[in-house]
Image (cartoon, rainbow, N blue to C red):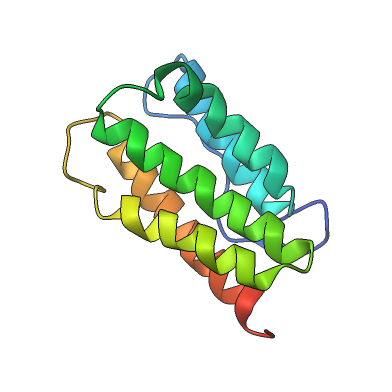
Length: 130
């Protein structure tokens, strides 16, 4: 495992997609992972918002799933700021959207599964002492 800047072991690492050239989408997924591993939850939210925001009014399952990951990062930021009750409310939005995982075709479905595992593990870490 790679050690993050904070000295803790990073469970997930940003990695390039199988294609030689990394897409902007892939790059932002990697940035999200890096930010979560470095406890920069606001920045993680910002990374995926670059994908979601321009398409936020579309009835698209993939964009709704990305919105769920954004909500997970916001939930973590709220825990970090000492607002666990607000965090629980935002986490419910993550749970609402994660059911879409695997329900659509995308070259990033494997990465979304990684993100789900990452955020669930991070949620467990952050709430174990609450």
